[in-house]
Image (cartoon, rainbow, N blue to C red; front, side, top):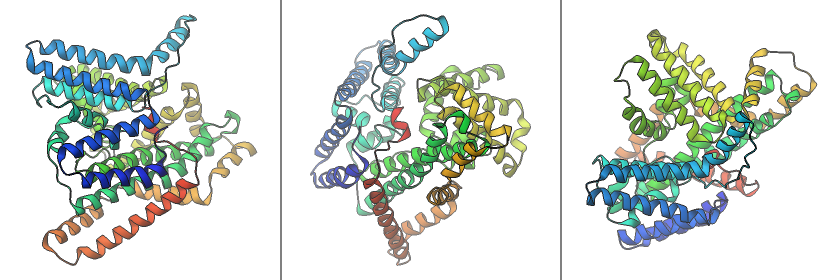
Length: 474
């Protein structure tokens, strides 16, 4: 288990941040962050921290070899093979054997391998680093410790966003932190913590109850409650972690790219993926879709390329056929939008509802433990059968006042409110630059609100059991 959320917020983070501020030079600051990141990961994965250090060292040497010898392609090929080999062994070996046994009726013994937390994230970061060095987009880093910090940096180590080396290479050498930036980062962190603790955990209890219930207890109403609850849970859980990572990065002088841009406001599946888990979708676009040919080799080849990308997008999320089907499901609808250009002309207000229906149904498959369970729940959502006492009881038990309140907050919060957020940010920025008093009330309100949310979250955390982020297992 990684640090408990309460211990992280109340002890680990304040101590590391204070020491980081007190450290005299960049070398000391980076050394502190390396030590803190390794301690953070080793607390939950004491053995696999060695795997992460090995990954960083191996890719450091591979990148240096590309600068020192003419056989760049060989170095890159070996780096990719080792990286994907580690990912395949730890994440997909048991899944592959199980699938082989089911298809061919063999009895090969399956070996259960503990999955290193966040392995999909730090392996993809390492891959992007050596690929960028190969293509000359960045220079090979001469300091192993900076490569290790890039891969192991604790704010985004275990659940993203996936950070490209070129986005933070300058900050590894030199970065500036002031009070305004630190306070802005802390507010962003608290916002993400509130998303997770107050909204995601609440609606997640209803989703878990429905997805864990016997089939006989699940009627149409309960199936829809479970589907919508999980749709809210995964957004607020993952975007909450991304907000926390972006905020923490800002506190330590790093600028991470946004990972979500109101995805539930999308009016097409393609637009949804431009807004959802942006760091992953752009990674696949840059390092897989474009090398496959992108959209430059005809309509049929473009469709195949997209299905390949969505297949690996689904598989990246986990060793289960539910994830693969979920990826291909989105690839099918994305390709369908290309085949029928008139879809782009449909007013967004009209196209929004069917898009969200596609997304919601897809997340049912994503959340299900098995393919058959996913299809059963989808069928229950649309048969509109008369509900009996058991299934109605399951539905009613989920509709607690706290669930309804947080569900309503979640539905409002997922709407695009960018104009308001932009106005608040711009007003504060102008006030800080000009010394105007107009920014003071806004800063005070944000500060008081942030402290209130933080205290509320800590109270909730102190009385709850460990509830990890969904993307920890990816």
